[in-house]
Length: 142
Image: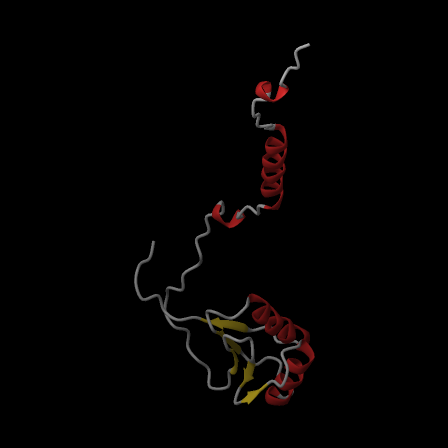
Protein backbone atom coordinates (compact mmCIF):
# COMPACT_ATOMS: atom_id res chain seq x y z
CA UNK A 1 0.00 0.00 0.00
CA UNK A 2 1.27 3.30 -0.98
CA UNK A 3 0.90 6.25 1.39
CA UNK A 4 0.50 9.59 -0.29
CA UNK A 5 2.23 12.63 0.93
CA UNK A 6 -0.40 15.44 0.92
CA UNK A 7 2.12 18.09 1.83
CA UNK A 8 3.35 18.30 -1.75
CA UNK A 9 -0.12 19.36 -2.96
CA UNK A 10 -0.32 22.13 -0.37
CA UNK A 11 0.23 25.31 -2.36
CA UNK A 12 0.35 28.57 -0.48
CA UNK A 13 -2.77 30.68 -0.94
CA UNK A 14 -3.47 34.26 0.05
CA UNK A 15 -7.02 34.85 1.08
CA UNK A 16 -8.00 38.38 -0.08
CA UNK A 17 -11.50 38.54 1.38
CA UNK A 18 -10.43 39.73 4.89
CA UNK A 19 -8.14 42.31 3.25
CA UNK A 20 -11.01 43.60 1.09
CA UNK A 21 -13.25 43.80 4.18
CA UNK A 22 -10.69 45.86 6.07
CA UNK A 23 -10.09 48.22 3.13
CA UNK A 24 -13.83 48.68 2.61
CA UNK A 25 -14.31 49.49 6.31
CA UNK A 26 -11.48 52.05 6.14
CA UNK A 27 -13.02 53.71 3.09
CA UNK A 28 -16.42 53.92 4.78
CA UNK A 29 -14.79 55.33 7.94
CA UNK A 30 -12.92 58.06 6.04
CA UNK A 31 -15.96 59.03 3.98
CA UNK A 32 -18.14 59.33 7.07
CA UNK A 33 -15.62 61.28 9.15
CA UNK A 34 -14.47 63.66 6.42
CA UNK A 35 -15.74 67.21 6.82
CA UNK A 36 -16.32 69.22 3.72
CA UNK A 37 -15.40 72.88 3.77
CA UNK A 38 -18.49 74.79 2.66
CA UNK A 39 -16.60 78.07 2.83
CA UNK A 40 -14.69 77.16 -0.31
CA UNK A 41 -17.97 77.14 -2.23
CA UNK A 42 -19.05 80.58 -1.02
CA UNK A 43 -17.62 83.56 -2.84
CA UNK A 44 -18.03 86.59 -0.63
CA UNK A 45 -17.11 90.14 -1.47
CA UNK A 46 -16.72 92.04 1.75
CA UNK A 47 -17.89 95.65 1.89
CA UNK A 48 -15.33 98.38 1.46
CA UNK A 49 -15.29 101.68 3.30
CA UNK A 50 -14.88 104.41 0.73
CA UNK A 51 -16.15 107.92 1.01
CA UNK A 52 -15.60 111.04 2.97
CA UNK A 53 -15.14 111.13 6.69
CA UNK A 54 -18.21 112.23 8.59
CA UNK A 55 -18.13 115.41 10.65
CA UNK A 56 -17.20 114.38 14.14
CA UNK A 57 -19.35 115.89 16.85
CA UNK A 58 -17.61 116.97 20.03
CA UNK A 59 -19.91 115.02 22.33
CA UNK A 60 -19.91 111.64 20.53
CA UNK A 61 -19.71 108.62 22.79
CA UNK A 62 -16.75 106.43 21.79
CA UNK A 63 -17.00 102.68 22.31
CA UNK A 64 -13.89 100.68 21.44
CA UNK A 65 -13.75 96.90 21.09
CA UNK A 66 -10.25 95.43 20.97
CA UNK A 67 -9.17 92.20 19.26
CA UNK A 68 -9.81 90.19 22.45
CA UNK A 69 -13.43 91.38 22.65
CA UNK A 70 -12.89 93.75 25.62
CA UNK A 71 -14.91 96.98 25.71
CA UNK A 72 -13.74 100.53 26.40
CA UNK A 73 -16.40 103.22 26.79
CA UNK A 74 -14.86 106.66 26.66
CA UNK A 75 -11.87 106.37 28.98
CA UNK A 76 -13.32 103.50 31.07
CA UNK A 77 -13.07 99.76 30.55
CA UNK A 78 -16.05 97.45 31.04
CA UNK A 79 -15.17 94.90 33.71
CA UNK A 80 -16.74 91.94 31.96
CA UNK A 81 -17.78 91.20 28.39
CA UNK A 82 -21.46 90.46 29.04
CA UNK A 83 -24.32 92.77 28.03
CA UNK A 84 -25.28 93.85 31.56
CA UNK A 85 -21.76 94.94 32.50
CA UNK A 86 -21.42 96.83 29.23
CA UNK A 87 -24.81 98.50 29.76
CA UNK A 88 -23.75 99.68 33.24
CA UNK A 89 -20.51 101.14 31.91
CA UNK A 90 -22.27 102.91 29.03
CA UNK A 91 -24.94 104.31 31.36
CA UNK A 92 -22.29 105.64 33.77
CA UNK A 93 -20.30 107.36 31.01
CA UNK A 94 -23.22 108.63 28.90
CA UNK A 95 -25.54 109.69 31.69
CA UNK A 96 -29.17 110.31 30.71
CA UNK A 97 -28.48 111.60 27.18
CA UNK A 98 -29.83 108.85 24.87
CA UNK A 99 -29.85 111.10 21.80
CA UNK A 100 -26.09 111.27 21.87
CA UNK A 101 -24.23 110.03 18.78
CA UNK A 102 -22.31 106.79 19.40
CA UNK A 103 -19.17 105.87 17.46
CA UNK A 104 -18.49 102.14 17.67
CA UNK A 105 -14.94 101.26 16.66
CA UNK A 106 -13.94 97.60 16.61
CA UNK A 107 -10.64 96.00 15.72
CA UNK A 108 -10.69 94.08 12.42
CA UNK A 109 -9.87 90.85 14.30
CA UNK A 110 -12.66 91.31 16.84
CA UNK A 111 -15.11 88.40 17.01
CA UNK A 112 -18.44 89.30 15.44
CA UNK A 113 -20.27 88.40 18.66
CA UNK A 114 -18.46 91.19 20.51
CA UNK A 115 -19.75 93.79 18.04
CA UNK A 116 -23.28 92.36 18.19
CA UNK A 117 -23.15 92.47 22.01
CA UNK A 118 -22.16 96.14 21.91
CA UNK A 119 -24.98 96.95 19.47
CA UNK A 120 -27.43 94.99 21.64
CA UNK A 121 -26.41 96.91 24.77
CA UNK A 122 -26.79 100.24 22.94
CA UNK A 123 -30.20 99.24 21.61
CA UNK A 124 -31.43 98.17 25.05
CA UNK A 125 -30.33 101.50 26.52
CA UNK A 126 -32.17 103.45 23.82
CA UNK A 127 -29.33 104.76 21.66
CA UNK A 128 -30.49 105.05 18.05
CA UNK A 129 -27.75 107.06 16.34
CA UNK A 130 -24.89 104.56 16.10
CA UNK A 131 -22.02 104.89 13.63
CA UNK A 132 -19.44 102.21 12.99
CA UNK A 133 -15.94 103.57 12.54
CA UNK A 134 -13.82 102.22 9.68
CA UNK A 135 -10.42 102.98 8.25
CA UNK A 136 -10.23 104.41 4.74
CA UNK A 137 -9.42 101.95 2.01
CA UNK A 138 -5.72 102.16 1.16
CA UNK A 139 -5.81 100.65 -2.32
CA UNK A 140 -7.86 98.61 -4.73
CA UNK A 141 -8.04 94.93 -3.86
CA UNK A 142 -9.46 92.14 -5.91
